[in-house]
Length: 232
Image 1: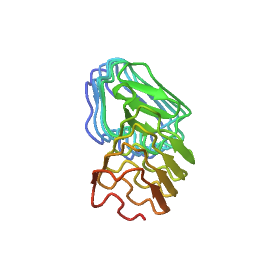
Image 2: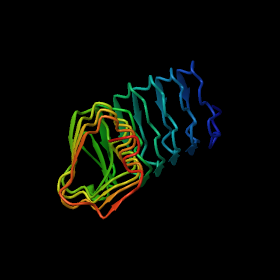
Image 3: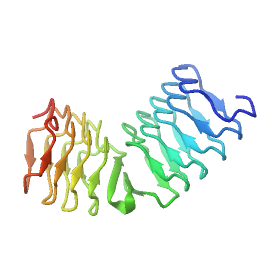
């Protein structure tokens, strides 16, 4: 990429199956949606220090990518940017990231994960925001998962596409499951909801085909008509 380029087009390198390495210029300010999606042989990526935004699905499906260091200059990181990168081992979020879309690591399970800023925190394999009150995403394949105490909102897709997840325990602080929060976790068999759960959003448990039991301490005030579509 030429040394004066400040942005590249959406899907610019998307689907380049033989692409192994890209050297991005320090002048680059934005990586748009799908820019490197499904570059299935991409192994190395160094983001320029002046980069400001990372688009949605930017590296989705990069099945050989092992690590990504996001510089402090990045302020926005859109949803699913590193989704379905099965060999991803380490990711570091910069200090500048203030907004992040739905689960940026959906279907990925990096063994090492850190957030160098204050807007987001890593607790175990969980990515949290809003001072720990919102679960952005689970980044590990666990058979039993207890949502950390203090989490009030389970975000969109936060626990989705975790086929090994068999039992989910919400605890006493969870108030809301957003749309598709646990969708397509096809091995999920049991859910224990907490006493303060108020809302189950659209398709929250979509396609959880193994779900057999959901224990409710109280009946939530709002349950979307399709909350359990293709489940139960």
